[in-house]
View 1: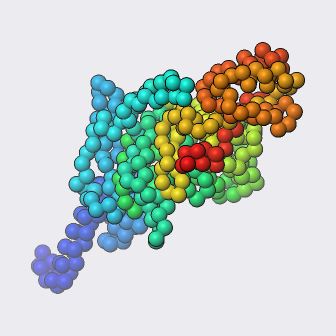
View 2: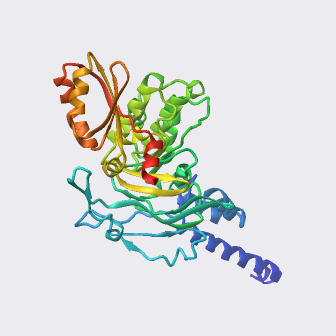
Amino acid sequence: MEELAELPTAVWVLAGVGLIGMVATLIDLAFHDVKQLPKGAWAAIIVLVSFPIGAVLYLTLGRVAGPRQRTSVPDADTGVAAASATTTAPGSGADVAGSETVPSAQITAAPRVLERRDGRTVTIETRPTIVATEGLGKRYGDLWALREVDLKVPQGATYGLIGPNGAGKTTMLSILAGLRRPTDGTINVEVARSEVAVVVDTPHFEPWLTAREVVDLARTLTAPDQPPAQVERVLEQVKLTESIDRRVGGFSRGMLQRVGLAAGLVGEPQLLILDEPSAALDPAGRREVLDLIGGLAGSTTVILSTHVLADVQQVCDVVGVIDHGELRFQGPIEELLARTSTAYGLHVRGDTRELRDRLLEQDWVTELTEPAPGRLRMVVSDATQAERHIPSLVAAAGVGLASFSPATDLETAFLELTS
């Protein structure tokens, strides 16, 4: 005891500062998400490693910066999240700790009744909102990549974020994933960060790893409770069973995209964010990936970006159109198609004269051309009527139906939306 009493005052001051710093770091740990290691492991490092080395390791390697995400507690009676934490982005002028907790019912999209061009009305179902932004903006110097974006993604929806290259789609997805910090605005995500999976446009992996090892590593890091058999299951989903033990260094870009998708699906996330998921795939691969995404509807909320409107028409039920960083349109896909002239490509085998006559008799067909024998392109005013009656009209004309798919290009949709 006497030896302790004889210690210089400076030593006691340093010890006190170290203790205060350690406690402050532990408090910070309690209120932030972490990466690399569990919170318990980071707490042990902060306490056991000499201050400030332990604190510096946590702050530089373990602390997750950017908007916080919390999981709301579902209400026992309704099954809907009772409350959620609102995150305020830097530069918005509001304090995160003082942000108001907003009940889920307040951010749930209200029912809407849409009037179609044929005079019919369509009621859009009400679903809880799982992702919502308000006034979201991102600025690089004097350039605004995003400006005043109010995104609302219903739970279980497949949300298509469409726009030309450079419109701000990737920036938007990066902010939602927590990979970039917004300049201003608020973000609300109703699932835990561990329940969010992100697949980038061109995923890259260590070339000496096999597809099995890449996906198993993702399982170990994100969902260690999942059994190893889950790895083979998701690789089978993305049609990579035959290449499961091949090294990914020899994979094509399309195969790498499939590996990335499998790595994102292995943890069975509640929210899946996909950046151009079919950009590098051949037609057959594109069809398979779109079918896979479509099969997730209802069970997993999917946000995907693309500049191909035809892909969105096939798998998405909600769409957001972004251009020059601004959200030009947001709503059900039916509403977008009702606002724009929807085009379809029809490939048939046989004499098309009778089919052309039958199509021109329909009041919802506004334009019909045959750029090549057996290949018709039509513009319709009502996509629902077209999709419902085209097969029967083809059968009545006595010709074979080879393919029938959307052919509306994004440029046309943008011109009609902004004119």
